Image 1: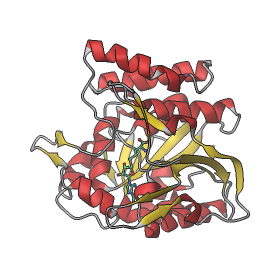
Image 2: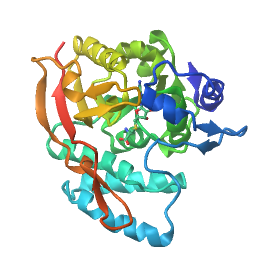
Image 3: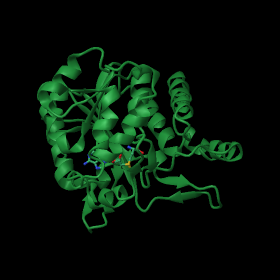
Image 4: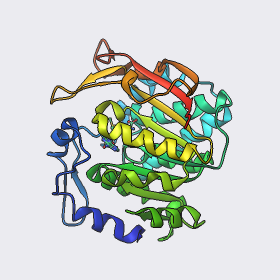
Length: 310
Ligand SMILES: C[S@@+](CC[C@H](N)C(=O)[O-])C[C@H]1O[C@@H](n2cnc3c(N)ncnc32)[C@H](O)[C@@H]1O
């Protein structure tokens, strides 16, 4: 098990390796990823809608253009607190409060407001970005512990951003694991709050006991082989305890190698219980600072909240 101070140096040694868990989409974008000798991120193209902080003028424009998305969930105390935390996290990392980050807040608020999630879960985030979801899961109390799995290069970025969280100040609060035994130990250790796993080790996840899983616009860019492994791992846990899965992905997407990834072809089962299954309101378009401002994505994005059968 590798503790906080040693995680980035450990992952940095693998940055130049080809990631066998990466689809053609991620093999393409990872070509541009680079870090320097101080382990600072130099380039992360394709990892989301950018991280450079907004200038004071554009900040106001972004705030106004994000208004239509903020209105999509109730403006309750959970939303206000989580929104504030997510903004503070961006500020602490000198990064922008992007639409991608806002969407994580909207997702949790929507699930909470509909009474679908309680607190103190063991959460698994498959393919986070800048640790935005993992961070607010911990800060809101929805998760007492978060397991973060990602491709090695993107995991480096998740770790880099998570390291500044006040909740993860101690060296034993975050760990990197690569086998089932260490994962089990980390889950049972109350000091450990965030556990990182490289996607190449995804077949250990059944040892995580995660009961609340998130996948947001990430399976849509994965090879089917890995989508199947993630479902298998979740269903193994579901044999021991109820597992709820929030899945938000494009109805279908063509990857650069012409692989078609379709939401309906994920290994769902007839016995799975869907609490909702609809177009995700905050994921149908994005905005730009130039007219016509709001631009639809190339296809619909569905979100589904499911109690997985075994
Ligand atoms: C478009 S980004 C989405 C980031 C974030 N979830 C969001 O809502 O903005 C897709 C994410 O999926 C991750 N990813 C791609 N293939 C993966 C795999 N096989 N296992 C885990 N994560 C993967 C990428 O590294 C990236 O972090």
